[in-house]
Image (tube, rainbow, N blue to C red; front, side, top):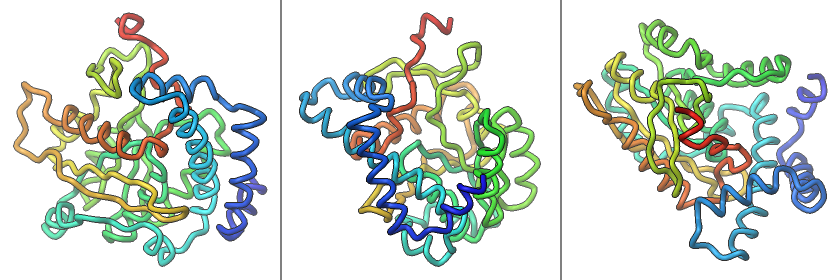
Length: 284
């Protein structure tokens, strides 16, 4: 952890040199998860040529290593620099609820750089962003990440405690952040199935149920890289109460916008994740 804390103090100019070197090694030498990344891209974009897929794969490695060093830097980056590097567009869809003193659920994807987006959201909107997260096995690394995510008042929420924690924390005005494109566990019985990126895909049902139970509006936050070290986040309202408890209203809207964002900026999604590890028959 000492090394991570020391690296976090390095300027981004130095961290990007490290990132470029690590990306070169990962792509040309180590071939880190190359088959997973390439196959995910190929299955998601069957219309793309071999050359296009290899180019996207190479671009992904640099975005991945940039995300890593930017996440380190997030432990030390100032609020002023975050505001300069992360710009929010169409903020009125969120401001209208915040001005009424209401809490809001925001939904995003694992599009680089979601970590900066969450921190910058707390700074921009003057309301803490409480991100729901999946615990990781390395507790020292997890502690570093959780401390980083808490820097501007956010209280990270473990996934398995999401509903009671959200219900408790929204007694005060909060923004609840869900990065909702993760794969449910194989034994999870509560799943929503749909076609996503040309493949049959499962999503957590909590994405649908948490807004309905808490009666909170939902805003999609689509982040993409403008240039190295600079991002734009476009906001779009996708659902608001009163909700129908008989129909799926939120997940279809989320999936549609998530897929469009990834198709617009395919080099920026987390392709190294084994998102389609299990087929539908293995779940049921």
